[in-house]
Each structure stands twice: as structure tokens, then as C-alpha cells.
Length: 139
Image (cartoon, rainbow, N blue to C red; front, side, top):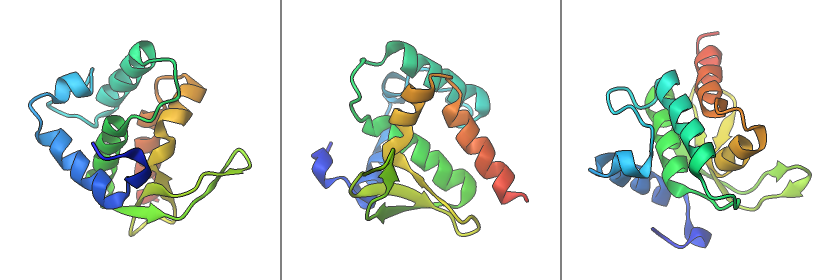
């Protein structure tokens, strides 16, 4: 995988394609349901497994960001975009990678997926992200 300082939308999109074609997907994304990877039950199982087994550090996990991002692109016609920066807890984050949608007015920031999941510790943040986008898309 590329040096994290050089990760951009193009790198994330390429990594997502490589990840999904990998015969090691179940090892790299434990808990995934290969028959329906982004179903609510699969996402909840993945996140719960991640929260239980992940190292305690706040390290970024490109596999999870890429996997979830690809699901958002696939299910909601999103596209990978580079974001100059955004504010999180009153601090500038610097460059980020997000998913922008043609019919929605927000961008989901991939860099924050791990942080928010660890902060909420519910095991259903990623499921709620998909459900929120579904509701917004069908308003």
C-alpha cells in the first residue's frame, strides 16, 4: 500500500478494486458476508469484529476505508474525491478522501470512518452511514 501521506482518491479507488478482487477479502475484512458485503448485517458484523479485534491505537486502516467507500460508490452512485481539508473537533484535518454523490449534498469522509467508529463504540456506525444515505437518496 502507498505511503499514507500520498493517499488520494485515485489511490483509494485503486486499492478498493484490488481489495475486492483479492482472494483474501475475508481475512482482510473479517466478518464480511461475501454474498452481500454491504448489507446491514454484514456491515454490523464487520464493524463489531473490527472493534473487538483491532489494535487499540488510532491507526488508519486503508482496507476498511476502501471497502466501505467502494460500497458507498456502488450503492449510491458516489465517486471518489479529494477534499482539501475539513474541521473535526475544531481542528483542521488537512487533505482527505471522500465520497461525493450526484444526488446528495454531502461528502462522506473516508479518513474519519475508523475514528468515528472507535469513538461511538456502537458497532453500527457503518450500518447507519449506509442507512442515512439510503434515506437521503429516497426523500
